[in-house]
Amino acid sequence: MNFDDAIKAVGAADPLMGAFIPRAGPYEPRTGAGNYFATLARSILFQQLAGKAAAAIHARFVRAVGGEVTPQAVLAVDSEVLRLAGLSGSKTAAVIDLATKALDGTVPIQELSHLDDEEIITRLTAVRGIGRWTAEMFLMFELQRTDVWPVDDYGVRNGWTMIHSLPELIKPRELRASGEGLRPYRSIAAWYCWRAVALFRSEMILPESNA
Image (cartoon, rainbow, N blue to C red; front, side, top):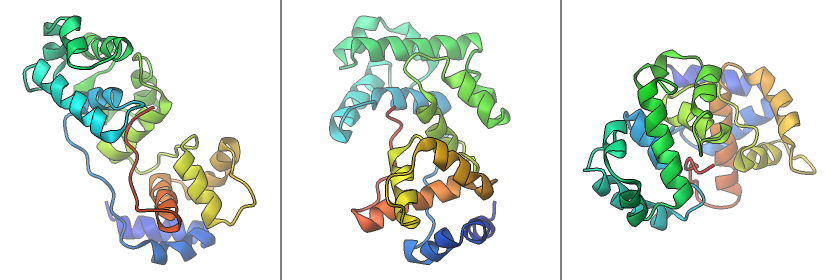
């Protein structure tokens, strides 16, 4: 898609964000990895862990399932093998549940890109350990969907508050209403909210799927 047109549309719909966009620098969305199952499994493993620790566990997990993360590979190894790789009991159960639901069609891995956003969220949140936020990050970064609005994300809420000079952190319900005028490019607006936090506080780090 033409991101230039999308960015102009966001700026026109919200003048304060439009004023911020030139300060933000080039729009640089993160691209997907292309392996939907592996991405979702990685999201589960990275939950509530620091980056280095999560990366180490993930690397051991990949080795434990034979080097290629597929539903069949996960289900082919004993759960104790996953535990020995560093996965907690709950993450072991979640990854196995993801693999099981990928094979039984609850999460139709090969067809996900053909489903609409809410259908994907419904399918993914049926998996143990995957909540709406994780599903939204999958939509935004792996599937490159342009109209996702993660109102529960602290960074998006914080960035919106900064851009609009609000006296206190905006609440999810208020943010949901405020974002209506930014359709169909709310993912782009969310990126600029994260960028605002980066500029005002620290270097930008796009969120891992860790919730």
